[in-house]
Amino acid sequence: MNWTLLALAALFIGPILIWRARRKAQPVFDAEQMSESALWGYFLILVGGWGVLSMFANPSDLFFLVMMVAAVLALFAKLRGYKAKGNERPLPDWAAFGFSNALVLAAIGVGKTFVVEPMQIPSSSMRPGLVVGDFILINKFAYGVRVPFINETVVPLGKPQRGDVVVFRYPMDTRLNYIKRVIGVPGDKVEYRNKLLTINGVKIDSVPVAEYRYADGGGEGIQAVRMRETLDGKVHDTLNVPGAPTLLPPGVMDFPGRSESCQHDETGFSCTVPAGKYMMLGDNRDNSNDGRYWGFVPENHLAGKAFLIWMNLGELGRIGTKIN
Image (tube, rainbow, N blue to C red; front, side, top):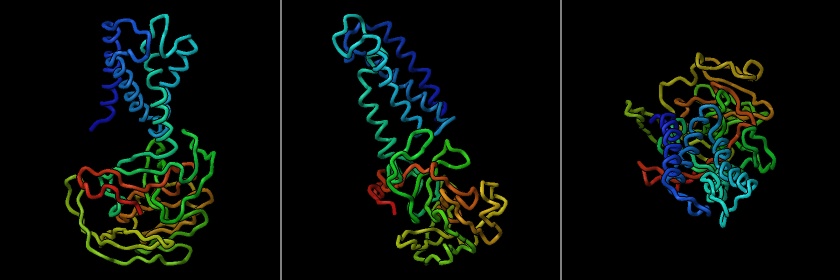
């Protein structure tokens, strides 16, 4: 589905609804008397604006900004002498929209930005734990309260630990949110060679537990082996596709710190994680665009810790599953 076209359509339809409402509506003096047509028109403008601007900035930040629009309109209306009720002159529809929705939209914006954010899994890089179609929840304050857009921590509350499943801004394009597992924290030496993971010289325990077959997007099924990995006492499952290479060297990007901190070859890679950065890998180790190819995730790219699957329309049994 082309979300950009839907956003443009919303920006087109919204003003039409407002124009039609203004033509038909009688003067209103209380915000609660605002016509539904105008109300939907303003909502469509907000949704469409968020969709279009998401092509240029991270949508999570933009959501907070868009949810604050009603509060700004309400404040501007107050400065112009309007009230939510009992106005002596007709209340403009933009002022009515602000008064009617400021608190609700601001609460949604604050909650999604600083408390809990939903996200849909778009790929198979985190199989078997997370599959395409999972809707998950992210704890936005697990690693501190952050300022939108600059994403700097103002209230430190914790640091990512090895084994955490983390959502972050993709270092090569911060408009995109990625989800991977923390494999290395600052100062760690991480090696992944011949499908064996070693951290600071210690081999990470990983044993086969079952066969696993999956197919996404109507493509051919992929046969893999489900591996049980124990990382710092945390147990989770990964996938190993027999015969698939550990690393495709031509796909490794020229990321910051590569020459100083990492070595890549046909057998895999080794990296020493710099201060203030983290190494992330997907659980589907042979089908994941992750840190082995684009490097480290800076502290100020972290978005939160994934903790729960709250919906999957294709597999209802996955609802309520805790993310390990």
